[in-house]
Image (cartoon, rainbow, N blue to C red; front, side):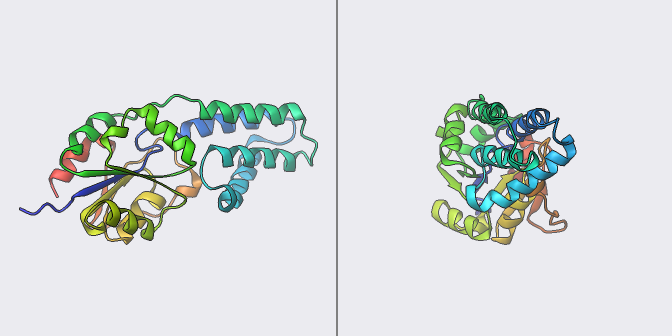
Amino acid sequence: MTQTITTIGFDADDTLWQNEEFFRMTQDRFCALLGDYAEADHLAERLLKAEMRNLGRYGFGIKGFVLSMIETAIEVTEERVPASVISQIIAAGQEMLEHPIHLLPHVRETISALSGDFKLVMITKGDLLDQERKLAQSGLGDMFDAVEIVSDKNPQTYIRAFMRHGDGPDRAMMVGNSMKSDVVPAIDAGGWGVHVPAKYEWEVEKADAPLGHPRFRVLDDLGGLVELVGGL
């Protein structure tokens, strides 16, 4: 019998390993540093606006986050932010870049179980050097047939990736925690989209679920993916 799915794409951050948790922790630290100038909720709101404003300049990742924190600190203090605070923001970003990788539940065994029967492709946004570091530390690198580190995820991204590394999007599945970046555009490209919600969700990545679409699925964690793929 012809196999429906031949290629499976995986997001990386908050799908294979923890990520957003460290951004939240650093944001809390940032708000504490600037507590004398503004309330935490106001600082978080200003920071989010700066991040969204800067995505086109810096892209996704820790470096852009650090620059957005510095920009927000300058704005909320009316250019009076102490150099010591800027130094601590930079140090917080460096700590994020050096943080060890923690795989999420069932990741290793699921990737291992699928690697022999499907072409596996990691498709992730973010800083090239940082994502390469995470993949190397994860110990999963040898299990993937290809890695795509992209500036954005849209239907064309998935069409190109699944044509390059598989049999096209109609025989591919994308698995990830972001409805906006992983699920919806993969389905729009003609593939399957599997949503694996993470503990934390970045506001920028929120989108309506394509409820009722025949190629949309939801899993609590990656532990159910082998059975899901086998049942299609």
